[in-house]
Image 1 (cartoon, one colour):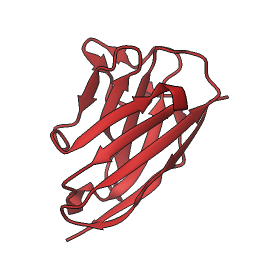
Image 2 (image 1 turned 90 degrees about the vertical axis):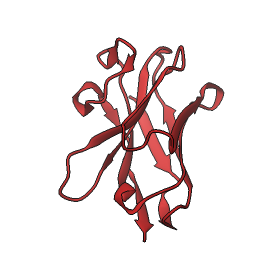
Image 3 (image 1 turned 180 degrees about the vertical axis):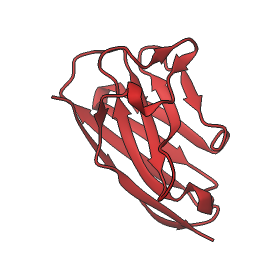
Image 4 (image 1 turned 120 degrees about the vertical axis):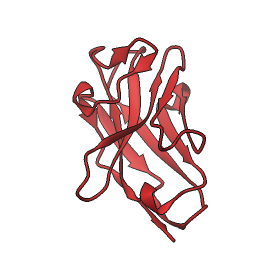
Length: 130
């Protein structure tokens, strides 16, 4: 059973930074898509950043390009999301997700659709005040 635990959320002011972490356990597939999603109240869940673990190819939502960076530490089984120049519209619950069956792999990286990911963390709240 795959288990994901996020940490690192919090409250910051506009322009600040946060780094989210997601520690994963319980799977053996080495090549997989891992992703950060976020969901604000009343909005659909958005695929913020994705990474294919075997080659490191990353994908980002247009709303975070140039500000957020997804990375991994394979030795620690940990996924990160470095968030810089945060804006109030970044306020949301952030979730770590992983696919274990190859469904999220697409040409050029990993899918942004949450239906392609089958394991999820409990989420960590990020609040950005103006």
